[in-house]
Image (cartoon, rainbow, N blue to C red; front, side):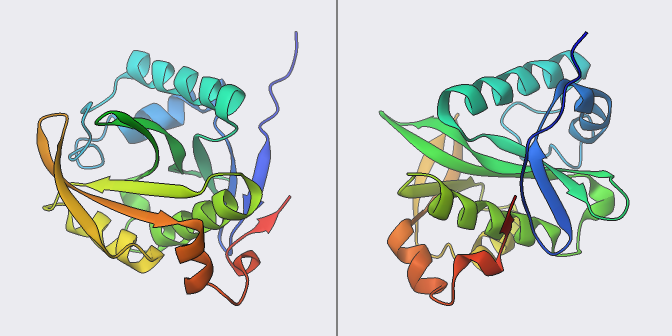
Length: 191
């Protein structure tokens, strides 16, 4: 029987960012089954079966793309905070790399979503060949709009996504570097 060892990608000040594994199923199901956490999710609340399919999709994305939603673990407690990462997302006729995040409600209002988003963007633009990342947010989701703004997203286009009006923000590697010319490694430490 082989042991599943999660691949650690990087750290931020308060978070360890690693690949999601099947061992995260119980804790991740608790997070994704919370109606408050999933209020703006296209797929809605997830039960254990839906969470297992999400984990399978993450593992496939890591294997085929080298990126995907990554587990966020609080330093010092090893508690699963949620996830943040970039994954392939069809938008219109184009495949984009979409920044997504979900945090357990007990971790809200602590700046962890912004810290994770900045770390993921720094990692994506420094450690991968990805040139552009989008974030898709419903205009009513004010907390997510704040996170995107703090992470550096500013200009957006209005469009419809899965039958919902959304804002699509885009950041490219050049824009990220212009915002963070003091070096991206301030946002994460590569393992």
